[in-house]
Amino acid sequence: MSELVTGEAVALELRPAKLPSRGLAVLLDLAAAVTVYVVVTLGLVAATASLDEAARTAVSIATFVLVLVGGPILVETLTHGRSLGKLACGLRVVRDDGGPIRFRHALVRGLLGVIEILMTFGVVACVASLVSARGRRLGDVFAGTLVVRERVPAGQGGFVPPPPPWLMGRFSGLDLSAVPDGLWLAVRQYLTRMRQLDPRVGSTMAERLAADVAGCTGAPVPPGVPPAMFLAAVLHERQTREAQRTFGGTGAPAAPAASPTPAAPAGAGVPVLPPPAHAPATVSPVVPSAGAGAEAAGGSGPNSGASAGRPATGFVPPA
Image 1 (spheres, rainbow, N blue to C red):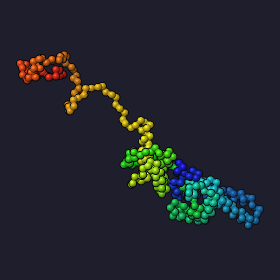
Image 2 (cartoon, rainbow, N blue to C red; image 1 turned 180 degrees about the horizontal axis):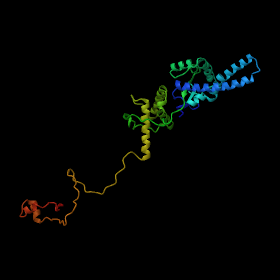
Image 3 (cartoon, rainbow, N blue to C red; image 1 turned 90 degrees about the vertical axis):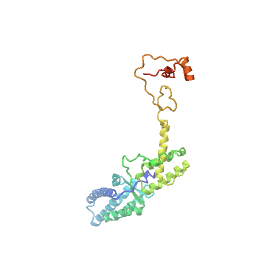
């Protein structure tokens, strides 16, 4: 997790906020600020009724600056980039390096926000956000900040995509014992959030993680294999080994031993027939006589015709 998150748990790889969500957050912030401004103005009008016109004008200008300019700056400073509208839309203002913003960042954003949001009714902010690759307005450019989407949609986290079929089992010979648990956790976190990352940040992170895994295993990343696919295949191989170690291997369970049966003669292609439904009433073995033995030996004898019809094995086949 430390590989993916820095600062005050600010996720660097979350996608930058788009113009619709940012516009909705600004409208909510303006609605809250205008409501506070109207309430404060009504109170000051009643309190400064005895003052002259110049004093009332000075109080009105000070109220406008403090509420509509100083209020958002103070809120973003105290909440580290989470105003009321951004909190409702799941957004947050962070620095370019991913850390939480400070007072100077909120001050620059607030002062330029008066020009590009209040004085021009948001036209300059919209144009700058559309032109910028990461959706930043002028206040973000000069302050060195970025508005990111902090909220992760439910149900998309925790799923590790499987490797492609042509990488299945390709890394079965790797020695994964030297890879630390922290690196495995970083690889899993990257794969589960790979689709939510900025493409440039995700590619750089995949290359770094693949190089770390390759350095621990002693085998380089195969040429032509993207780093993300390599990480998915290696993690799948580790999960397969863990499953084999937990459940005792991948072989199929042995079949129960059958009762011993007489082996068929080698080379015999005749299938074994089932036993007869009804055995003969009486089967008596036929013992060859001496004459039959002589006939078998000599090939001639007085009972050669009779012995020819008898089986040479001494057993009568079943009916």
